[in-house]
Length: 398
Length: 142
Image 1: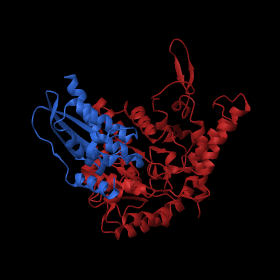
Image 2 (image 1 turned 90 degrees about the horizontal axis):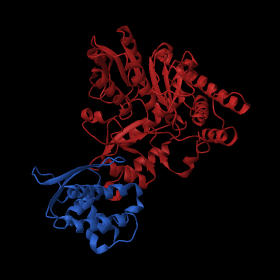
Image 3 (image 1 turned 60 degrees about the vertical axis):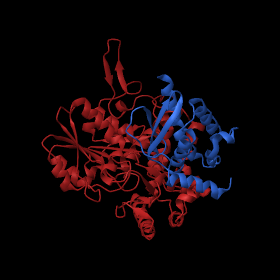
Image 4 (image 1 turned 135 degrees about the horizontal axis):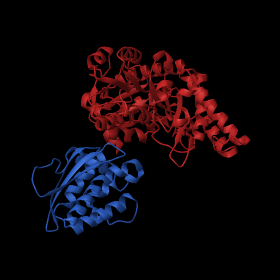
């Protein structure tokens, strides 16, 4: 398929391989955002006139669409946030902070993103609980066996990414969740790198809490989703209070909040973002998430096969089933590799990718990461491989 | 400057950096420079006595531009007064920002006079000089 007509940036010739960080936006998303600002930019929750009612309808429509996209039982389980980071903070500090006690254990791994691990650190420090790490196998994968080994009678919650953002390994979360529930343990999943790339069914997975971001799946920045089973969602304390989320208050400080999801959406929502995200979901639904995943897997295999033939490239995650390839060029600092590729109009990300504890297990602190999405092509991969097939990368980076 | 010569000077400093490696000795002011937008992470230590830079060293993980800029800075500042070092910093920043500067003051550091062409590497070239500024500020506070 030719995606150039749908994605304005693609026709600029840039080779965009940083889709883990954010994806490009199709013109339909940009146009919907623009249409809102140009033609009906009213606030939400002011249904007294047509323009505002249209905004409310769009928000409700999008909420329904998100619920169907992840197969939630009800739209009431979908909360609009500013991003996966805020979603995770709301879950961890709004639900677990008041429910964990001294010596309770939070089980996670050393390969997690800062947005998941740092809120847990805060809770652990405040409540005197312990953050424990599931042992990673040599290939950095999480196995159910290692989860079982790490669970103790004090384990109250297991929290991890479905797919990690550095190595891209896919965790067996369905099995982990089933086991956790047998032990009365709740599970919080960071879906930022999985929901955009494969079909995720929260009912089938039986996940308790899930967070993801719109901008990593064609949508606008500044919008995320918090999913939780309704019984838990109702018990999340709002971290921010204000307009739109209260049903009643008086001068004697009697306050009543609205029901979920509104209770957790204070202030004016990101209306433009929500309207744009609706079009992003349309686009992905049309492609079919199974197709998106299959296409990425094929392209990833093509990339790994070609990169493996280069003697100067070290790949850290050849076998993981998604479009993330983490690599270094022998003898060249990752930042210099990225600067060199940038000269060739190829965008990759370098660094520890916000997972700073991973270097403790990976043994290497900084890497380059090329991450694919469905609009990338074999030609994009060829351009990357051709560029890296060069013994003078350091010299040419200058 | 000829492009090959420029690149070779940068690479020579990257591969054989001047005063790379810290020492465990008193009398130095130390700073860590940890770029927020890239992955350069360098420590600098400078010994200043009676307003004169007696020694300067650095260490850490960083790209070719940051490392070579640090190495070149070491060569330039040792033996200089704080005032002279400040003049170097001022001219260097002017060069990176494409403003007027004095080539004679910058000596070898003029290898970075075209770094503006790679805007995302300006911060790498500036990193050691930002570190030196912090150290001088600390010295003045004492």
